[in-house]
Image 1 (cartoon, rainbow, N blue to C red):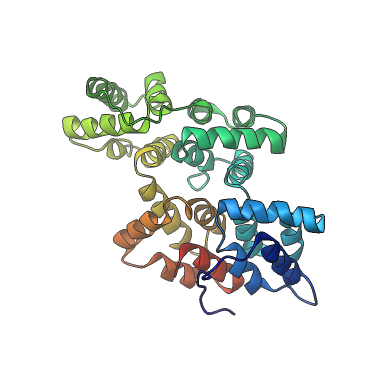
Image 2: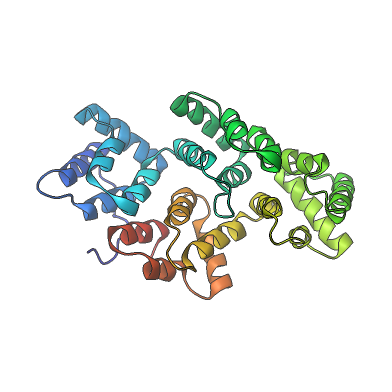
Length: 315
């Protein structure tokens, strides 16, 4: 087993990386350490070039080669990490749409609310290319009831990305939210409209006014019925929209603070957030648990899977 990984002083050429990866697959066994030392230390653009060059040189998709050589959770984290971010999100969304909705399967909501409008559009284009149908079509056909009412507009939206906020509008919509939440009409069209169309800065202003005016954070008022899965979804949407680090910290905590690790959640968060906000998530994890995220990962995982996760999250 490898002790710890360090970023190389200089990055080899794409051709050299391809040759080393090909060598890792050759011989009697697979050199997992070599695979980790290369792929875990290449950014999204570099990984894209490696995958393209590998196909040109060896006539085989690198993802296929990795799938043939690796197994288990280690294979999944390597494959997810190697995918282009938009393709990765498309794969995760497709998996999630076919699963039963549970508190640990909120991936559709998670991706729709935490990605930028541009990133979500690229993901939907990748979904078209990979699965020959639209994301909206799959969500609408696999999800039912109030969840469909929330999720279809969430994946369909193209939010404004600017910093502007209308405080008068924030006050007005905070009152609308409070009225319907107080009446326990959680699936009201106005709640759905506000959450699925407003920009994130505008929502931040609305939720702040809600807290100041009515004395509770909106997420607290949405805890009125602990067994209501739709309320859980609404709370997650609010967190993902304005405080994604808190949402992802909770996903990681839930994945590891249990009997048996939820590796589906753990690999997903690591693969999707390392190049976005993992350092902020790690700070939130330590603040919330007084344990370093890497220590928690080492306690809950083992082998090459553990080393890949640690290499990505940073020792």
